[in-house]
Image (cartoon, rainbow, N blue to C red; front, side, top):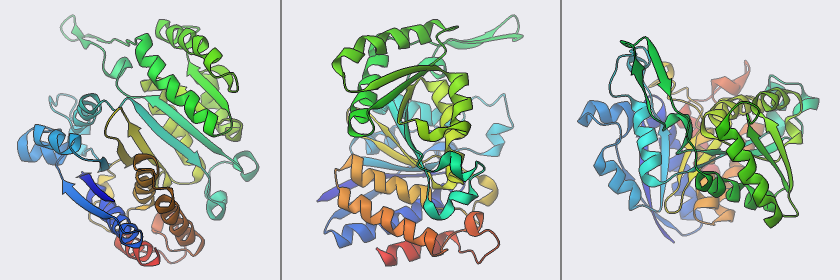
Length: 352
């Protein structure tokens, strides 16, 4: 198979972790007789510095014409610490999601047997955890009308959803639940928010089309609590943009490190695959960043993006082997010998 993949390294540690995912992907492609053409493109702070736009038209054209997008991370402290900045790296991410139609963020959370005691939660609470969040990505408060009034002393952000937006995400959630444990949880705040009531009534109307799926409805604050009490009670969870942004980061630490969790953002055409961590600028250029989340995002790309399950399994197998044999970066070394970002990438590629 010939694959054209847009490569958006981004900022901070993005270029370093992306480089390792490319190594591993190339090794898998060689093993299974595929040809990958990588097409680099600018985004985030790097794109602002180069052309003044965090998601330039040229980058969009590359992404839209590719079979998939492999993405690193964006963000830089000089923007984080400047509330008056008119152009921000994160605007590029929102623009990219909107223009590419990436309406569903797929965020798995699972545990690794060799790392289960590194989790901040007790072993007995997290063993067997294997859940997936589907977060709506192109609607809600992040995309609603926003502004200031009364000389800047009053600010507002509107949260808006349509039934169609809810329905298309919920459909993916129901379909995913059918391939897994046949349990679906709709996360909302229907006791307070009108948009949440729209979510709940829309999902309720869809239940009859999926009679085998057990559906529950929980308030977002209750889910935030249960994720640290009984995360293994969940299977597939669907939710709106802001709630999903917060809950998926909470769930990510169950595994023991944010540097381990992959994600996918899917739409009707091209899909994007990225680690869930940020740009971690403090570690940029030091060769200490954990590349495994990006490598596992590449595994998701082969599996869900291209339907190449054996290729994805080969990557997962070698990642598990690296963890069990201690070929890890300093965040997972626990006082033992640690390896550099590039060393871990080289080891993974060689062991494919």
